[in-house]
Amino acid sequence: MYDVIIIGSGPSGLTAAIYNTRASLKTLVVAGLKWGGQLMLTTEVENFPGFPEGIQGPDLMANMRKQAEHHGAEIVDMDAVSVDFSKRPFTVKTDEKEYQGKAVIISTGADTKWLGVPGEQEKIGRGISSCAPCDAPFFREKSVIVAGGGDSAMEEAIVLTRFAKEVTIIHRRDVFKASQVMIDKAKANPKIKFILDSTIEEVLGAEKVTGVKLKDNKTGEVKELSTEGLFVAIGHIPNSKVFPGIDVDEKGFIKAHDHFHTNIEGVFVAGDVYDHQYMQAVTAAGFGCAAALEAERWLEAQKV
Image (cartoon, rainbow, N blue to C red; front, side):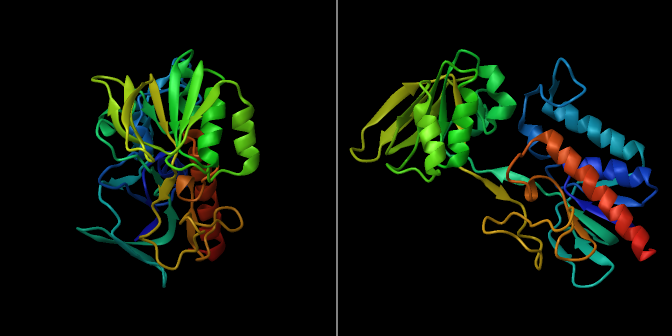
């Protein structure tokens, strides 16, 4: 029996584990087979406080994990395949074992929707990114592409113009999904240009991105476009499907009520599985801290 079971092991989950264990709560982290969250796919991280010269994403997550384990967190590298939140104590199942906890913190994050084209996956972190606020400084005075047509694509492009010399938004349709105010902002920026009715078919380059193959969706013509970076902004998929009974919004992000409480008493949420606005490592860590403190206070109030 655990005081707190944390599902997920990105910055939010591991920060929650650090806080809960330091509060003398018996804490289990169901980390997942691919533990560490999206930072495990990131190279240089320059915007996490405390690392003036930057740190590699996997190194940052390894340090967080060591800190959680140092304070007594038990971590299992298994996926949570099902949960039972209908009664307390709560039950979390993996392929190998069943665990029970008095409180649960969901911090399973969200996965980037990638294009799914040849040459993409192996170049993530080598010219391909999904986060302009994270990686835009690496593309100073370079030409870059943003793939997408929603508000997030417009926001990514605008952020990139502070560093890149040229930003091209590529959208597969001739009409944007973005709000008109965001479209107007992007069109008013002299550094941004648009290619519509076009689909990226392949990412070119050996070690890093050198260009893309573009298909004109009206004519079928395929041509190559040189670029030094590709930012994919077609959305995120929150990892919330394994939690029946938990309230989510229309996109599947878990709803937080009254400071990181979910609609089920004793179940809390933190990080990108609910936050689709900021999606930064430092905000995820802060949300993990807050959810851990809320769980601690709730346990005290329940006298368990």
